[in-house]
Amino acid sequence: MEAYLDNAATTRVCDAAADAALRMMRECYGNPSSLHRMGASSARELAQAREAAAGLLGCQGECICFTSGGSEANNLAVFGAANAKIRRGRKLVTTAAEHSSVSAAMKRLEETGWTVTWVRPGPSGGIDPQAVADAVDGETTLVSMMMVNNETGARFPVERAAQLIRAKNPQTLIHCDGVQAFGKLPLKVARTEIDLMSVSGHKICAPKGSGALYIRRGVRILPLIYGGGQERGLRSGTESLPMIAAFGAACGQLAGQVQKNLAHAQELKAHLLKRVEQIPGVQVNSPDDGSPYIINLSVPGYRSETMLHFLESRGVYVSSGSACSKGASSPVLAAMGLPPAVIDSALRVSLIYDTTPGQIDRFADALEEGIASVAH
Image (cartoon, rainbow, N blue to C red; front, side, top):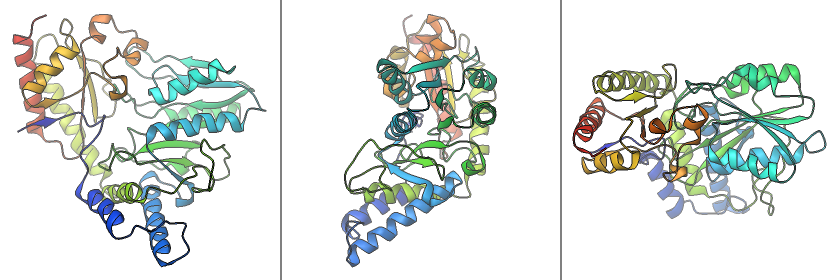
């Protein structure tokens, strides 16, 4: 039995999503913008997927703009909001622990004359909401802050920060990278002060190439792609209906299951922590109150890459951090102030709703074996 525990990087596509994609490619293949029957049929499928995504996110379907995934949604939010608000100011606020699709976008804006304030996480990986609000002034046009950190699972208090920001500068737009929260934590985004939220399909058992950006009603951002005006003019180009329908199917499968799945993940995390605390030399880098779906740990003295390959040889698949970093040293753990020996030995274990206790045991057994046999 293999143990795939790299679900924060990507997940296996569920049957409902795979079936929906195939049906769109083989049967319902009309262009949703076409005025004939085949086009109308595709347009209905598009609308149904939009409602399914909105239902899981806790908003109205009209607030959903489909994208190719979380990175595009993050870029659309950051660049789209910054460019739409440029006359009000050229100041931005984010955290030093964001996904690269946010941090790289922010750095690009810095290069073109914007001022970016980077709020650092504390030693446990959390963010102080007051520190975020304190960084906002009258010229701040956008704050971008994730909900669940993709490397440590730390839950950032974005809703509280949004309240503080709104009280200080009502004109500041608030964006949240919700990729690692969507479908895993209960969300009612329309009831918050969040203006924009990015989500991704391939983290919830939909195919890669699917995602969305929530845009609060009345919020104006500028597009990155111009053309035929699809997605209310925010993302021109013929919609990828197979990916969108599959995304909608995965969302529909999770409807009503989030709390149940969350409880299951909490039990798995507790089991994992109980196992690893019995292994000498293992340090847990994730906070106790973080998302149970992501657990970051280190074995100082054993390089991540070496341990990853050993675990792979035992049929266990984890990562050393964000898959987008491709093995580079973690800027998130560095921002937390962790020592190099901890950063260089970090492993990320990430779960999904069908992860089993047996897979957790397989990981713990293989890790213990690796510590005993891998050279320092």
